[in-house]
Image 1 (cartoon, rainbow, N blue to C red):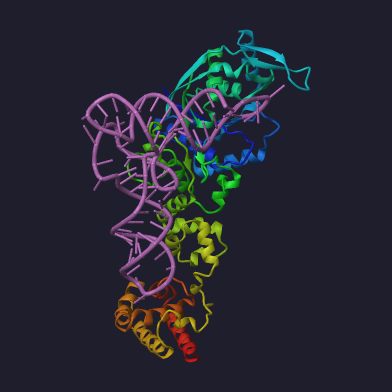
Image 2 (image 1 turned 90 degrees about the vertical axis):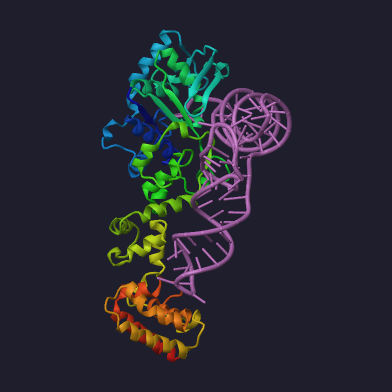
Length: 436
RNA sequence: GGCCCUAUCGUCUAACGGUUAGGACACAUGCUUUUCAAGCAUGGAACCCGGGUUCGAUUCCCGGUAGGGUCACCA
């Protein structure tokens, strides 16, 4: 039996974290089993649907890499009213449903109610084990606003059946919907799919995650410069774990390791700090070229002139990288490095005359370096700095080269700007020192 | 409130009757190219409570408590 899962969002809001996680689990399970995941839009509520939301969901799914190449398989329930009408009629004819008076305004329209057999429904949930409900409380629930206007539960059951869905993997907020759906499945004589209700994603206060808790839309994370592979990695680890101690996974690795048996039963708090950490891990695994290429979208600076390897180490997201660049962290690459002369002594723990003496010596040492890379530069300067006091030598040097209180170390900066520029900046620092 | 689900460090989690209860994030301290990060090392930090079952319960059962979900002519 080929596994078929589905992700059925309703386009009534932006693509959010919870939806993404549901989609991911469906994707991973199908991929692991060599099956397929379908995407359909549940847009039977014409009042609340928006094309904008549909596009947002699609864009998010593509970004996360959860959509196959063939997007022609995506459809909308609103296009299948004829199909649902057929099944609604069938239910009425077989006595499983009946038309009834609408409660409000529309006297000419007849709603359709499912005739509740008042029984006990039990299903084996793949993550929770057996779950059962007495269906009395449901009464004769409504399955369509009219024969031509199906409601969610009816459409779900029909579509899952017609598209051969074998596993229904969804949030646990659907757990009590399952009884209605099973009742209809039995009324229609369909084969029951396997159910797996996954735990919800919670806000830090353990309540249901919503807009008031900050960023919940997937595209917001994209805009902040998160990597889709990191986002997917993090989401997978919320409520599931592979058993080992590996934490950084690619989507392929996740699919290989995934199993519903290892999905948790309890809700998990979404922790941005850990997401940030994971994103950094994935960033560091990118080559400099890949990183630079992606970074382009987040900064106006010329990324080909930026020390990408340094940025990658330091920034957890492209958003943070852009901030760093904007803050002037890498301005030492250009010639515009103005600074207050006092800064040369701020962390040096020495006086102007001594600092000047050290800088002169450093310039001399620098002149002797033939291979001007950071290792060589360090090899030449470090013994002197150690002897004379690292703070007294290295701090003025670093400020002379960077013009800033915080920066990468002086050896790296020197190697990046080149010998000539380094010499020039030391000269300029020397003249600053003479004014103090 | 009815029904349903859940319960290990602050957070994500491992453990499937016997462990000094492990890891990761975060936090603290130290080290390092005595700046900021990163990195490395170290540290503090958890089995919700009460009964059973058992030679032995974090683990199994029951009850309590707490939290969550759901009770639409929404999905």
